Length: 103
Length: 370
Image (cartoon, rainbow over all chains, first blue to last red):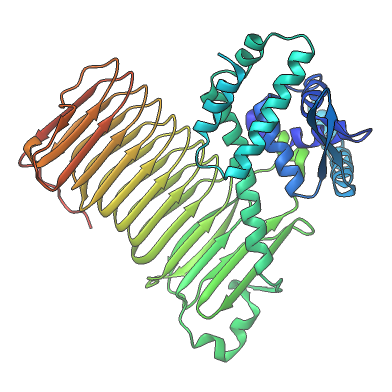
């Protein structure tokens, strides 16, 4: 996928992974990778950006004698995911229109 | 390589970041690597998946650029009080413009911010800037204000992500008619649209910021000229300024016929070329993974730095006019590594994995275009 198009959609993918429970860097990369390619170096700025935008918060928790950072989605983050899903209806209409005209 | 070493090198590449930010990046990578090792991956394998520290830094930086732009837009929008615009056959004008008293101050600065809308400047016989743009119901928000000679146009729009993903949003234009004799500060910023400025003389300053799209400036003269984009080239032809500052990434910067007191050009992974440059003081051209080419360039303090690329070209004067410092590894060089002539001109050239081929010509003449 085109890099520019991929940006933005990664944000939503990361947020959606956090919807069921808070998670940490490594796990987020693993889960998001199932759907779209993401590297660790790309994830960091995304987390930072989402946090600055108020879409997630973080806390530290001990794991095997070291600290691990967990990210938790906020209401605003959930709203972003909802927004994305609602856009899809708009997209489907266009898709139907284009496909109809192409028959 | 041990992972601590990898992280050190990565942070070295990000020296310009805040110390706090760098500390967080360290923690983040440490945690990531520990988690992956716990999961049975070998250290070596993990580091390999990151690429070189430079590549990891570059990816991080590319994602960051976007963050920077967004927060900038938010900041600018926050200081503006939402104001209704008035549209008529003469375009869109701020409300206050109707009030007689606000007409007293001449417009000394024009600030235009758009989101993915191309800004088309037109010089015209108008007293004040006039905006021509059709906002879409519920999607475009346009604010035009004027205060103490500062004319601000801020456009924002509700992005529909899936449209952008499939490239359904077509580029739209905003035409801004500018008084012919405008000689103040001009600042334009946007993203994903190219920017062009032609034939503006005697500006106080020209600032252009965009991303993923090119910038072109022709026949223009400003006290301060600052151009910045990412992933796209910058082309400047026939320009004059006291201070010039051009920055791109992953793309070239091409300059021809420049006059400046100081010139600073930076790209990464993009070629830099300067043909006919009369620089009074500092001329600093730096990039990486690309070559630097100069032709007919003069300056009293010249720095040409890259890595994995050649530095070549012709400078004005004679080598004896300069204190020279140069360095290359894995390449030939026509310059001495150190030469102190005691003169007041400095030349500093460096690359690694590339040759240095700088020649001098005494009688270079620069035909002033402006």
